[in-house]
Length: 332
Image (tube, rainbow, N blue to C red; front, side, top):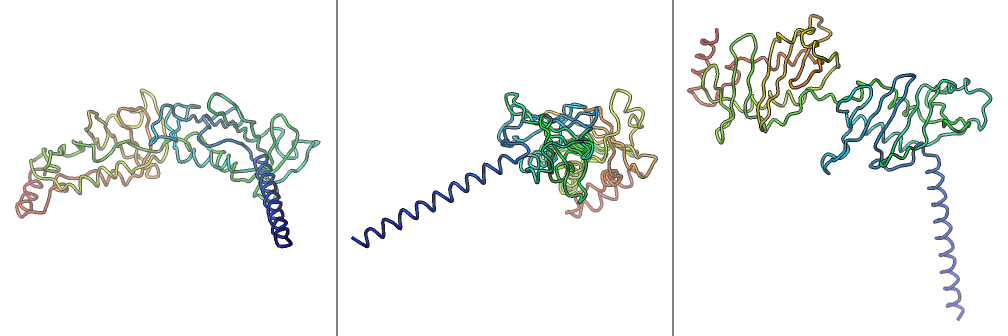
């Protein structure tokens, strides 16, 4: 009986310990949730708004997405265009994972002491269905430079949050724009035309035969070289967004570009116009068609794409060696 009673007491003690730690964990989780800046799941956030003075940036999740496309974002203010989903995801992750670091004052006498009389940033999130989460106001950096003074619009208390929140949110609209130059999948391109200062070069992908040069001379093309060209375009990112509108093309010399790259495939046609800028620091002016934005790119892209016909010749056979000389002779 004594062993049975001892076993029962041990079991009861174990249950008490388990219950105690469960309550402690629940309280800790609740306290952590209470300190979070924005309490929501990433998948439920539909809109992020960043106001800085009179300037407003609005990022909105794309609707009707497939599982593969989930997480896509649009910039809707101050312009409507595709957003850099990686940049937006980093911002959203920081906002949802960050909590209040330390309470400074419950009822401050002067918000100006913290830069909160005129907040530097006003951040707000909206969930699916239009539900708005409590907004967050950011003020000055605190003396150690690792935190920012913050408060809620409807509450007097001032507290600290990590400076990462301001670093992620205090950006220009262009910082949130998609920097993709031209959306294309190299394996779906079936025709390439390069129109520069010399003779136009036409490349065609023949079914089961790889790539071929159709102009200025007929020859088998080096598929690796064509592939490198297509991947170079796909991987190129915009340096800066310069201008847009019906007259932008003329203002930046893109009506007479140094190189036109035309890509066809899957029932679509895309053109890339490149013009070397007079200022070497600018690099290249570029425009994609369809499209109306003038952007700048690294000047090295023009060098990489401005190839001669002989650059594309497949040199794997003896016949191609002599053909290369014929091409060079015909294009002089």
